[in-house]
Image (cartoon, rainbow, N blue to C red):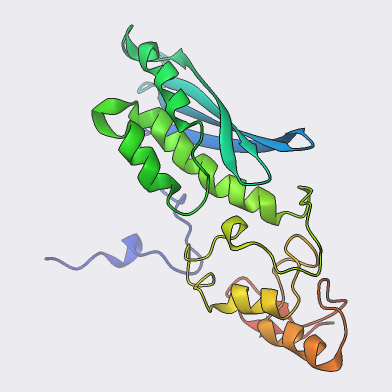
Length: 233
C-alpha cells in the first residue's frame, strides 16, 4: 500500500474542512433537545442531503435528496422513550414515508447503553429507513449530554452519586468505568457546573483533601486545545 501523501494527513494547522474541489454531495445532521414538560425531554434530529449544482451558471440545479426528521420524547426518570414522531419532507421514492410509522417501535426502549443495538435489532436494514436510523443514533448521545448539562431537573438527593444509567460510561477513553471522568465524579465534580473544559482531576482531588466543594472550582489550571495545562493569568 502506498503511503498517504503528507498534504492528506490531518494535523495541527489543518482542519478536515480545508478541502478544495468540486462539491459532490452534502449531508447535514442537527439535533436539539427541549424540556417538553417537567418530566419529559423531547429530542429532535433533522437530516438533510443535498446534491450541489455542478455548474456555476446554474445549468445543473441543486437538488434536495433527503429532508427528514425524528423526534423522541424521553421520560427523565428512567430515560425511556414514550413517544416518537417521524417525518419525511423530501425523499427519493413515493413509498418512502410508509416506513415512518414503524419508528413507533422505539417506544419503551431506554436511551442508554445498548440503545444502538436495540435500534438495529428493531429497525436496522430492511426493517426501517437507514436515514431515520442515523438520526436516532445521533439523538441518543444528545439525550445523555442533556442530562449532563445541569439544565434538566433530576429529582434525587444531591448527596447521592449520579445514577450510572444517566452517564456515558464506556463511551470513550475518559468515560472508562474507572476513567478520569468517573473519578472526577467521585471527587465531587457536578456535571453541568463549573468551567469548560472541566479542570484536571487533581483540582477536584485537591479540593476533596481540603474538605472544600469542588462542584464548581473557582480557579485551576487552564487547558489549551491540545489538552496541555497552561498557567492561569
